[in-house]
Structures are given as C-alpha cells and as structure tokens.
View 1: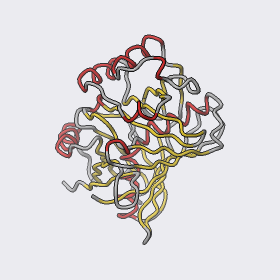
View 2: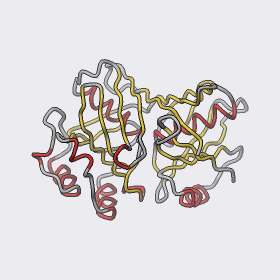
View 3: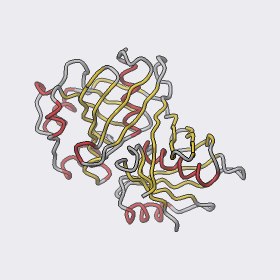
View 4: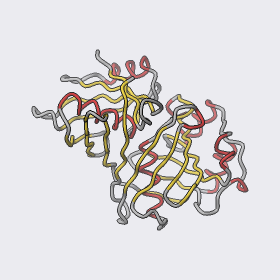
Length: 278
C-alpha cells in the first residue's frame, strides 16, 4: 500500500510533524489501518477513501501507533497537501468519525500549503484534581503557572489539557514518564497535554505530550492549536482574530502554525501551515 510521508507545519525544508497519508479508492479495514499506522510509526497516519466520483469529498480516519484518534490537525494538513498534489488545488470536504470539516490545498512552484477548518470548539476550566495530576506528571507546581491563562480542558475535534508556564526555561525542560502519561491521558480522555509559553497576546511557544498515542512529544499539533483558539476565545483573550504557535523547537524539529478565528463561541477555527515531502 502506498503510504505518503509528509511533514506538516514545516519551516521551509526543515522541521514539521511527520504524518503518514494513505489515499485509497477502496475501504481499508480497521485492523489494517491500525497495523499500517504502527508500522509507519509516526504520531498519526491519515486514511482517506473518496465519498464521491469527483474526489472532492473523502471519508477520513486517523490512527496513532497505539490507538485511533477522532481528529488530527497535522495529519489533516498533510492529507490536504497529498490531495492537492493528486487532484489539484482546491477545497476538500472530509467526513471524520465525529465531525465534518474541510481542508484547502494550495500547490504552487513556491511549495505546498494547506488550511484546515476545525470541528466546533468548547472548553472548561481544568478541575483541581485534574490539574494536580498533570502538575505531578511534569514535576511542576502551581507557582510555575502563568496567571494570565488558567489551566483548561479544551476541545477542537479532540480533547486536550493546556497549561501556561511563566518561564520559557520550564517549557524547554519538559520531561515526564511515558507510561504514567499514557495512563493519565487515557483516564481523563486526553489526546495530548499542551504546555505553552506566552510570548505575546498573538504569539505562543508550545510543547505537546502525546503519551496517549504512544509518542513522547508531537513537534506540531494542529488539533491542539484549534482547541487553544477556542479556549482563548471563550476567555475573551485579545487574540485580534489570529495568532501563531511555534512548536518543536526544543526537540530539534521547528514548526509554525498559523491560527485564525472569529469571536463566536464554538465556531470552527482555521489552522494553516506549510508541508514538505519526506
């Protein structure tokens, strides 16, 4: 089976988050998708089958090496680029397990980019017990948190926790036990735990622990970016309609995510980035 390997949210010819992409004209069994994703070994592989003869609508599922996830942003960007190269620049409709979204592909001589429109967003404060477990996992304390942004349980197609750290060095030093992280994330139905440093109202640096999928860290996480956007909007953060996230710097895979949003709670948000073949 042809598995395309594409790094999404890349910076030119480097960085980004690798994803597998399989475009198939026929259905693939759940067991085969799980096996292929495990063999590919990337944090996610997207499997897409056309829903109509025009190849503009696709049924999509996402698998990590250890589990199926409801939505993956960087794999959607990679999928958009693969669709654009196979079927041309344009907008593609994607049916996920729990949502309907779109991805826009632009293929040019300057490179490949894609923009996803996320599922609806929602958020709540992270409960005290949840926060205590997350802090303990990363060997952090409440004094390490930036008071400008309260810890949140956020959703933009998948569930994430987000903690803002007041010191960039704390973010650079992120470490945790993979098995303990997997247990915590699965008990609390979290796909990732997002640690961020606030550079400005419209600029963030992030690291995303992805133990739920058997991966220590994601170098770029579009689903968490969408969820963070919804959370900022719910808190009336002065986002100005757009912001950027730099991710992957501390693991040697620099990535850049562009996020745009309106002020209507729950509305989908747009996450954009470049991509490169691997």
